[in-house]
Length: 191
Image (cartoon, rainbow, N blue to C red; front, top):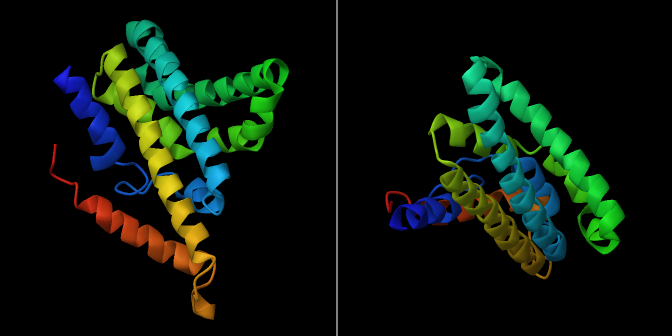
């Protein structure tokens, strides 16, 4: 149990993909202008990342590895993730329209998010079991959600601050991201 907790905390805080590995920055800067949009994106990324990691693990260990096709891992995972996002969009649109209205625009962005591809690749590279893969995917998704929600909170607060003209918009966002990264750097070496 301690091993799973360490993996989870490591994925959320210590090795946060956005703030320590600098992956997924396009969505991070694009969506973090609005707190409610950031919460929706965090939920969507976490759920898609978890499900695509499960599917990728099954495909890798039951199809690619036994057939000696591991050189196709990246291509298969990209197709698998994109297909899963499209299928999820269709199902949610039909079965839960309210949820689709909240996630609709975010689902398409998730298919191109490099974190969603990085997590399944790291799962197979580290030879994680299915349970470890799920824990790592959930932790990574919640780490992304934490980073984007923190950034959105700070950016909404800055809307009421007197920011110098040259730094308005993306300029101050980069400064905030750098400060958040430095704060998360303090967690390095903990695990």
